[in-house]
Amino acid sequence: MRLLLDTNILIRMLEEPHRLSARVRDLVDDLDNDLVVTTVSLVEIAIKVGTGKLVMPSELLARLDALGCELLPVHARHAMQMARLPGVHKDPFDRLIVAQAMADDLMLITTDRHLAHYGVAMIQA
Image 1: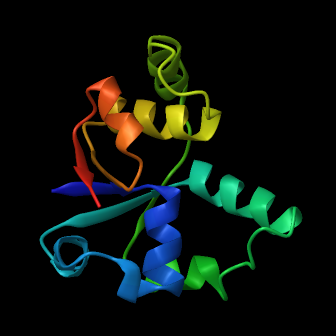
Image 2: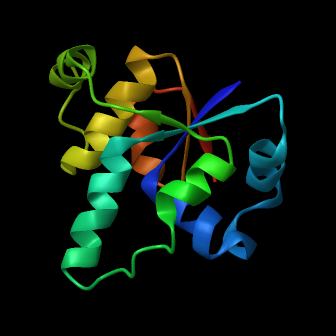
């Protein structure tokens, strides 16, 4: 299964793995699953670091590489999918992450219950 890690799941995985549910830990640890991290999450992290809301996870890119995470850039197909989403959620980062999951047939792992309203394939963490 290809798992798209929402920003909050990514941060927990790197900084507070004890806060992940057993189910999510099992999915992340399963070598048969592909872990996907969107560059949208990296931008969101950078913005939070810049505003002082977050400390940059140490050696972020090296750690993602060591975990075997695939970095997913934003493509035109993601923007087109985002334009088709209903106005359920106002956060543009979350909307773009949902659009990427939908456009690329990824299973989204998130703690945000509101994203289920989009009909995206997701695992509620």
